[in-house]
Amino acid sequence: MDFDAFRESERAGWNARAALYDGATAQATVQSIPMLLHMVHVYPGAQLLDVGCGPGYLAGAAAALGAQVTGVDFADDMVAAAHARFPGLRFDSGDALSLPYADASFDIVASNIVLFHVTDPARAIAEAARVLRPGGRFAFSQWLGPDSSDLYRELFAVLNDHADLSRADPAPDAYALSEPAQARAALEAAGFETVETKVVQNILRAPDGDFFDFFMQFGVRVPLIVAAQDADVQSRIRAAMTDHMAAYRKPGGFEVPMPSILFSGQKS
Image (cartoon, rainbow, N blue to C red; front, side, top):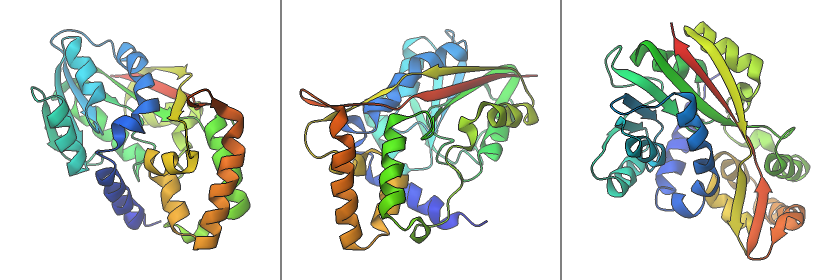
């Protein structure tokens, strides 16, 4: 199936969110970084590639631990944001599906909540293997799906009740690699051994106010679905989301469980 339209919508969406990431998406994604770096055995002097670096949080954390870091992202505005946040580090424009680096260039490759968004996750994993040196380590994180995530259970309950999902551009299954057996098979097919799995209990902390407005800045996939609906349907989605998320309201904001699952492997 052709996912080109979805891919370009993702690129445009992340470019648009580069200035918003700190106050929205980062409220959950950064929580996976410590375990991700633990799983790749980061060490001083390691050549580490952060694939889908966004504004550079993982790269910055790895650099603080002594790694020699390169970040790469297909959204140019995210690359600019990473340069602004970490001016001493290297950030490049490039694609997870065709990394602009030579074979065996890195000791470590890490990717935080990125394969969730690419159109060909198996190819992205193969690219990570290609640029790794023998014995190098790769790790990536994924959101768990509606069966394990309060956030995505509530969101998709609303969308399934009110939205015509067929209106959105065709997109790959976001949760394919959230299944341990599928993720392990993809890693092993790319030549990775000693595959490990960890779950991190991320909590999305959203400010008080309208949760719908916040979440339209948080990600890209759900806003693309919402934007494809008629205005009256969008209004119903907003109202239903407000009702569904009321249970997660705390003093000063919302706290919504949205766990991630992490996988790592070593190149043979």
